[in-house]
Amino acid sequence: MLTSAETTKFPPLVTPFRLREIEDAFETAKARAAEVGAGSLFYVGRFALIDLALVLEPEEPLRLARKILFAGMNALAETLANIAPPELPIEFVYPASLHFDGALIGGGRIAWPEGCGEDEVPEWLVFGAMIRAGGMRDLGIGLSPSVTTLDDEGFDAWNPEEFAASFARHFMIEADSWAEKGFRAIGPRYLERLPKMKGDVKRGIDTNGDLLVHRNSTDAPERLPLLSRINPPEWYDPVENEPRG
Image (tube, rainbow, N blue to C red; front, side, top):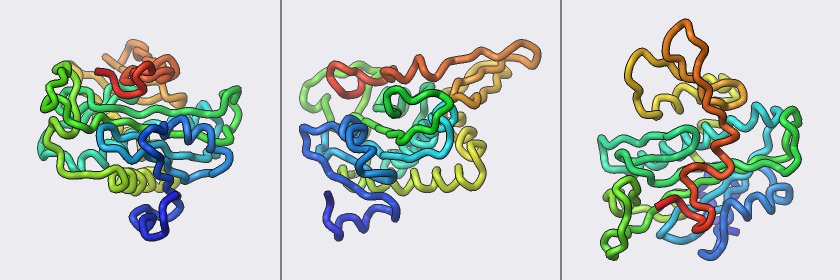
């Protein structure tokens, strides 16, 4: 756990835990969620890959609480925007892939206790995120044009602790907005970061987190199910335990 001097960078109600390079923030947060409680933020102290996970204690049933994924994605994008080169887009591919200037850079994921029913309030939720950070092209390691890193995109200087603290501050803003105004304070800002679609298309998020695509005013919307896209997330390589690419 961090010393008191180091924790001053983090907002109130967030307790940071810095992990060793060989550890996994998401798996550690899941394993310890019931023990450490809400606001515990685990992050790995390495520079090639940003890896963090935040423990939450929802008050709604799982089918509703799962939408905290979108608040986490908003916070992740805002954290990235603080250090990003100007005027280049930070976008989402539904539900939780994070793209910078058209290339995959990382994403978010969510977990809950095994066996928790859709209408039960989960004891905990974990929002986790990974961003590929260390430059690879300078090392002669090939990357697909559809994949990138912070270093290869010329991001401002950053370090794991400061990134985790910045994410925590942005997430607390999202949580306060949700508490004050409900999901209507979260969803529209998430939807703004989805790539634009041709034609008169409107998009929304259903109560269970599914993406609804309305292509005209008369037909039923196209539904993109959330659950089938988060286990595992489309951006995540479970074999390498890092973003695809």
